[in-house]
Length: 69
Length: 69
Image (cartoon, rainbow over all chains, first blue to last red; front, side):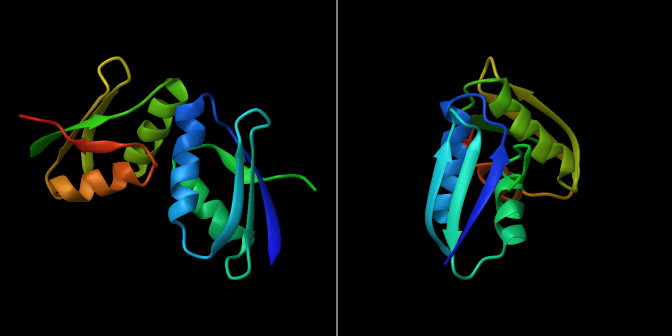
């Protein structure tokens, strides 16, 4: 299991809800957290790569990037 | 060219911006309008079906449906 962190621009609960909905449907995601307050998304997965998850988040139309370590 | 209309739940300019970004990248879209005020998205296309476009909008994680005629 690997944990990945992303910076995602989310302005309201509609934005964070959209990201939540997409991650909850994404196969291979074991656990995730969407923080509107911190503009961060954390995802745990054993099968998906950092880029797989970033691509899925970006499909929401939100500006997203891998968070600095 | 056919015009399609959708009801899309968007709470802020971040939401409508996300939908705008996705539609602007969707191949086959000739023209579109995203109205945060009216919670409506209008798309014109000669090649995409009503369902193709709905699927793309739903990938943003927003609640979306074909608008009543």
